[in-house]
Length: 180
Image (tube, rainbow, N blue to C red; front, side, top):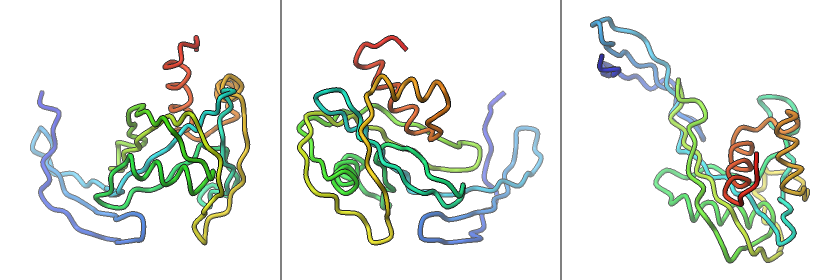
C-alpha cells in the first residue's frame, strides 16, 4: 500500500486575506477519483513567554469563529515566505511588549492535516525584557501572567482550549524537566 494520492485537478474557489480554498480532484490508490477540499494557509508561530519566576504571559482575545474569548500564548500568522523565527520575535513584541535574550525552537505542529496546510512553529522565549505592546489596528487583547505549572493544570482540566497553546506549554514543561 502506497498511502498516496495524486492531484488530478485543482480549482481555486476563494482567495482571501488569510486563506485560499481549493477544491481538488485526486486519484486514490484503487484508481478512483475523489474530491478534496483544501485550505491553503501560510502557517503561523506561537511563543511561550516565560519570565524568571516561571510565569507565562498569556493573551486573552475574542475569536470570532467560536464567538468567545480564548486564553492563548502570543501567536501570529506568517506572511507567505516569511521566516518563522522573525515572525515569532515580532509577535512576542507586538502582543506582550517583551523582547527576549533566549528564543528556543520547540518544533512545529500540524493542527488540521485532513484539510488544511497550516503548520504552526513553536518557540520558548526566556530572559524577557518588558516594553510596550504594538498591536495591529484590528487586534484587541489583554495579557495575563499565569505560573507555568498552573497553566499545565489548566490544560489538563480543559480550561485552556487552544491546541497550539496546549502543545507548546506541555513541550515547555517536558523541556524543563517537569513530570507531566
